[in-house]
Length: 256
Image 1 (tube, helix red, strand yellow):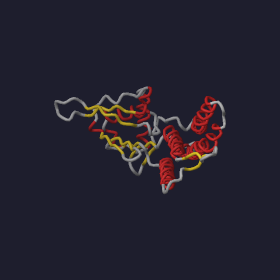
Image 2 (spheres, helix red, strand yellow; image 1 turned 90 degrees about the vertical axis):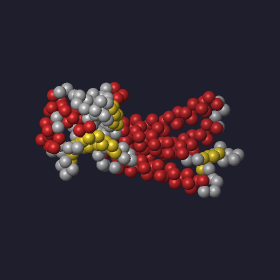
Image 3 (cartoon, one colour; image 1 turned 120 degrees about the horizontal axis):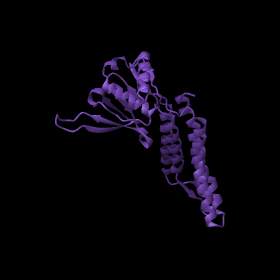
Image 4 (cartoon, helix red, strand yellow; image 1 turned 30 degrees about the vertical axis):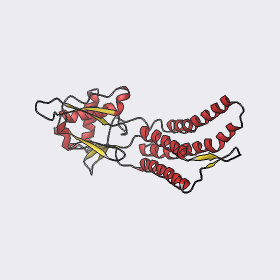
């Protein structure tokens, strides 16, 4: 399963989370009103809320388990003369499911007077704007999952990481040799870079580069960046198959 397929598979699970969240509001909540025990009613409601997010999230996790593993390699973009990494299913999947679930909770509802039923809040144009806002959130989720542009690129000039709105580029010639260190534990989503001081007598500037959305092994990425910082000669070959083979051999051999 490709990373793109794994990301696209998040769409039905995100929709399921959205619909289940609405189902809790319109079906389960009225049922709890008929339960005499407040504690039991609260427990049933809490279980429904938790299940509406846990079931889709776990389902997507089980279905895409293998595809979520971040590879110790890059994709080759020969036309752009660069190495790339797509959006990581391990990030995009859970993110989309959580946001879609939250969108289901954004719909404003109210209890029907005198009845154990729930309806959409009806007051002027409030319902229209509320629904439009929720639809906008779901459209953003779909666009993020369908977006196949690389989240991370390495080229002759430097390393670029693209977020949801904009990207950030760090040039090789701005980085000091010796880093970044290999991420460990929860720090896998961040590369700690050391840039040249702003003045000749200044201290190195520490920069954090968020790379958790990129589908690439963080240790391999850190080793690759460290290699190109310390060895400028092969930078011009970035984006070619022989250079990727050489990089994987060098970085792997260094135990990075």
